[in-house]
Image 1 (tube, rainbow, N blue to C red):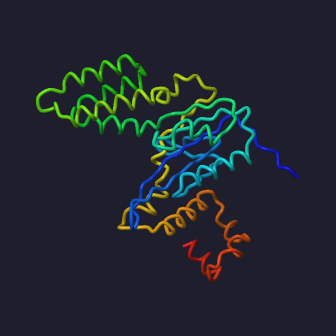
Image 2: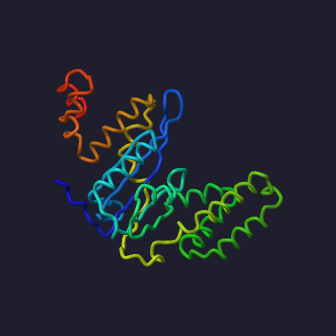
Length: 266
């Protein structure tokens, strides 16, 4: 029979790309995640309820997989979607709109961790200013004040600060803030029917980055895709299912099944 699709009041979506070292070139893996609730276990630790992850070196593959999962699992006609991303290519509101399809309401947030980092990086030449700008942008959400601060910084680009690079950094920061202004709007000012924002994605890739970054590891594309799939299965608690399914037994010629299971468990 047809399984009834789930109706939930809210779904949280996250997406981001993480760069790892490849044997031939930098590889970037792409990660989308969906969950039904976020529980704060402590100030630093949060648990995602009914979480599913979709990870691949191909952003389009990961995107198609989460899109199919949502379409098959949920009826979103009465659901508020809260999405959060760093605003990189492929992680704008329109990309999440494509993943979700039809829903009651979709609120997209620019990841605060990335926003802060962007402001600090671009204003590295004037150390006193990032905190003032962050306050105007994120806490007061005051566009006029934000422009006044940017203008002040610009008028202070004199003497040794008057370099093409500094002007360019400022120009790019201004353009970034203007383009993303709607997505920057703080959670509290949006008067939503839920009380929890997502927080940042960063803390959430540790399971992957620890395993695939650093320690001098270099990955071939196949190797990286393979380990990402295994880690994703572990996070989604689907590993046993895949290992014992037709898929692992039939199509793939991967030698001794028991040996494979032992290796994966290890």
